[in-house]
Amino acid sequence: MNGKAVVAVATGDPAGIGPESSIKAALDPVVRHACRPILVSDADLIARHARACGIAIDLRVVSAIRDADWSGSSLNVLDCAQPDAAELPFGVANAASGRASIAFASCAIKAALAGEVDAVVAAPQNETSIALAGIKFDGHPSFVARETGTSEDDAYLMLCFGEMKIVHTTLHQSVRQAIDMITRDKVSRVIAAADRALRRLGTASPRIAVSGLNPHAGEGGLFGREEIEIIKPAIDAAAAGGMAVSGPFGADIMFHMRGIDAFIVMLHDQGHIAAKLLAQNATAALTIGTPILFASVAHGSAHDIAGQGVADPAAMIEAITRLSKARQGATMPASVTAAMRPPAA
Image (cartoon, rainbow, N blue to C red):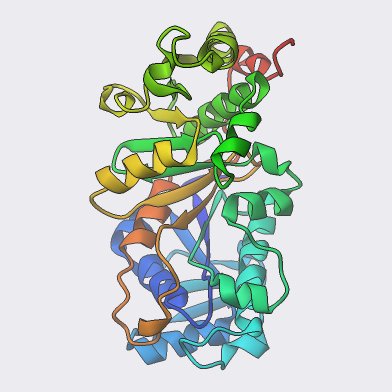
């Protein structure tokens, strides 16, 4: 695509603050300067939330991305009609809202797969509503993997705040299960996914640091051999293939390192504890490793304030601008592509 990136904004749970936050973010001058946002939602739902929240908007409702127009002040909406959800009360969990929020995200992902948009940002879902609809949903990374035909093992979470990016090798498993999942192949694949995502986000030569699994990164085998037998060989193979990757480092000291574009951790808490301690403002949660770039925001659907006009769009603005440099066609050097191949046993 020429010019600014097109970012599809799936508006999330219809009964929550997702539509309001999405409207506010898509109208924000910083967002409109950085990219071309288009909401993916039910047009009647968007109009209703705008009225309730006292937001004056001029909607341009389109049935195809190619019909959107960013030359004026209109707010583009790719209409994904969900009449059962458009008139439901705010702040109430129900199956229709669950179906609608999944439909919006799925429609946006399809547009990204077709190359019609450069990236997708999703407002918060409500997992109770999705469960009431009988739809499987266990977090955005696995959802995006299923929607894009990617193995769920190849979808990874990247938490972003300020200049910090933290990628998780494993996520929502028990520690015992997560340890079993950490193999040379898995570590190689998460390094490659991080490198590829950084390049698509505009970093020409990404620098990546990788943590160990054990205390002090194993202390030369004193506290475990996973670093020696699994993590370091994967790092060495990636480095030999052209990636600027180093480690393993102790997860308790790694985040003080300078000049690093992304940190890779082995376990959920190694990354999430650091993020929740260090993040001063909004955090964007990117799903990487799939064919598309997808971000969600680190807050809930906030049923208690839906439709009141008081939702803070900062997290949505952060997520959208974070992906404003995304490009579908970003490529990696041949040496890096070769390094993505699974290592020999």
